[in-house]
Image (cartoon, rainbow, N blue to C red):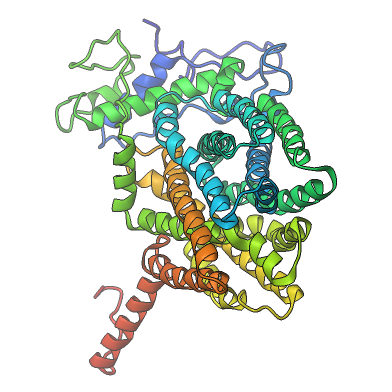
Length: 556
């Protein structure tokens, strides 16, 4: 047992000899730190200020020389992690959107009929792959916190799916290729987004999620025009060769990214800091559960100069075990999120947004071709016009959510989106259609970002819900509705002739009206609807009370 004067943080009456400049000591005696933590916890009446361990020097301590992988500082930096996830989302959405303007024309060349319905089934297959993979991915990678590995494996599977879709001219082969692409997309949207929430400080979380979701805009903007132009000039295989190259770049950046939780493997001072904090947290949790006992009002432990504390109910030689994390089943996670009003609002937004998105994607190319006689290249540039303004909305939307709350982002975006949807039924000018279509994309992207940020906050409210769970639930809600919307949109356009597109637009308008209710009363810490009701209730009470004087501070 060490003496009281031997450990760091203790005073010694003997003056230290002059030996030159003082070099900071970045090591810790974990036994002493644990003892001081126990003393402060067991003695609430002790007002003596115990010296706290100085953790700040650890955070800035230089790493050990010649240790750690190349470039580990920038490879685990916030900006690089966010950039990698943004690029992964972009490549994933390029893979999804690149065939949207191409598929109807290619199926027509192959001799198929009911083009809109068959296009809808291909989009349904993509969503089906997401649905199949969501539960096992969320369950397995919540228990085993691997993030980089599954992202790398998903790229190889995605490349194989491109080859299958490109070379298989049979419709069933196309369906199987889209299912594999959907499964890989599930990994990006769950494991990739969890990589951000687990490595980025919560106060900056909204901004980084907003930046990462600009990848969604980038993919849906670049994919259709590139796919339409390549298909028109170079044939069926060229869009998929482009996707293979894009995903090769994606593989490179995924290989480079490093998780911050692994830093202690090559950073000794980071390892020491994590061990100290882990001991303190475990001790506090054990004390709160009644595992550590002491007589009421007994402050002898805090006043003692010994370096150990008495823990009657545990073996002193054994460190305190942290409380086991509560595990929820995949369906239990869905139920838990739906039981929280904010979680239900975010999932409802994702579901209705997916219905609208899927229905329009399945019929847009045929509507433009039937109305104005334009080909896949024009449809692709229409998506480019829609996505160009969306590049600016991601960081701005994240900043608004961080600064004012998600409620100030979601509800205004829904209200701004409402008048544009009926205008999509106009057929006089294709330029006017371009502009209206771009406005709907701008507001829908803000709604999507707001729902993602809202669910990221909600997951911290309930024990057993991890970062990967929240995005798996969001991905599940979006994929199911996207699949249903794709089939419904294709069937409506094929069978409600010639007003199929109009029905889809008015259906989307009705869905947007329903979207107003959940964020109005449930989104954010202080929903706007509740603020409005509380304010009017206070005005009514004041009116009933007449000119009664306001209560003083003492009366309050």
